Image 1 (cartoon, rainbow, N blue to C red):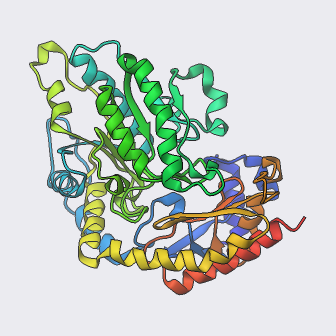
Image 2: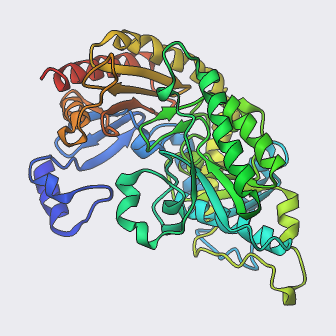
Length: 450
């Protein structure tokens, strides 16, 4: 049987890994995974790790979930793929019906794509193109929030604002407007999340008032800016933003690729503000971590702007080879069925309470600026100085110290800079959450002791 070392050597001879400085693996161990079950990942040496970050936020109901496995196996024997141009199949139809039924009201049309970045690209193009079809050819600019992240293809990268990903490629990107983030980490002492988020609405209002005729859409990650360090804000911002977009005749794109499907405490984060975006982008948890699939949901008004005689050239000519793949649709349907049968959202409320309780002591840690949480997403931010919130220099890679300690203790806690976070599969137990909190606390103590 192969060992970790043997597999890692083969890997490093031929693979180039995502979001990785490959030279790090001269000293940072590569962890090859042999199998997964529930919250556990197992390597080739028999070590097990709690998957506290859901394998990049995709896994909802555990690895090798029997119910999802069964749905996938049944679909493989029926139909593996067919193009979705001029053809259709039942899993794509059923999934669209289910998504329309559970999405915010008014979202009646589903456009399938391949992955999160591709969903963002499609939504940006749909927004611009629909305005163009209506005669508003000047509406070609987009507004994003500071510290936002929407993917790494060029259009998605352009509407993001995390310099680590974006700065190198700046000459290739379209220009966008960037509004201050409602990120409540920046609130004044004694200021509530709600008050701070309301205060930031004025910045967006001013930007839309000044540039509305040239703005196609505002794009946001509802409630949590995930890749930007799990920074969070109050739902009131989304409510005010929806109203502002309506006043200034601008679309609202909600990127719920990371926060959808129960991560923030409701099935979709937009529900907490009681709003419906013009475009809702979904991926990651859509297939519970099994297969690449994404979807853009929009309403009938947008759909009708493209519905015309062919010779008028108003159709949305955007496609991906694996659009609406039957296998992906089948596992997405199985995942939604688990939500329906198991009262997942209510069960998650108890798990979220345990997460808060198990990490509450870290609020008093001398090098923790904040423990923040929206539902099943909890983040712990380390700083050099607690009083001034002075961060550690990024070059010191303090979060990586927590990560390495956690691996030795049987947990996967991949950091975001100096932020350690929990975004576990929903099958995690209270005992496993408390174990993660213990491991994270030890790791933070070790990472901040010098």
